[in-house]
Image (tube, rainbow, N blue to C red):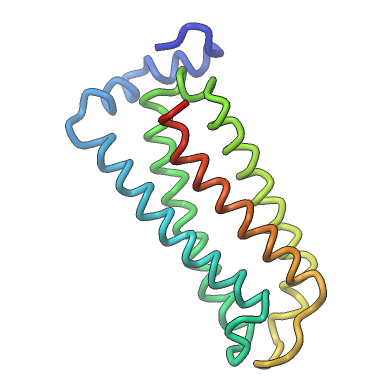
Length: 163
């Protein structure tokens, strides 16, 4: 436990839930595996959507790909959040002070803002486009930014243990 962390995080880690996660033979391990599997599913869905916005899979309508990949991304993101909360609770006072974790949280916020931009400026213009139709101009840069952000989030997640 790191007493220099904000009190709320020290209390979270010291809570019955935090202790139960740390003392359980399975809880932390299962949460870690779920987190990695959810990351794989999330990354797959994001890559499919972003590649389509970059012009790949042009023989398929963008609306079709976005509908199905978005559903998978949202479900996987929920898995990431829930499993991440379990992992965080077990070591909250240490992790909250970790610079890489702080960068990861900032990048997640940036990634969510990028999704909002995509939903505002791109989705309404591509939902009903037929296959092989040129995509609106903002689709490519938003897709490139998305791939970059989420790749960095995943890298930060793996680096947290080393800092």
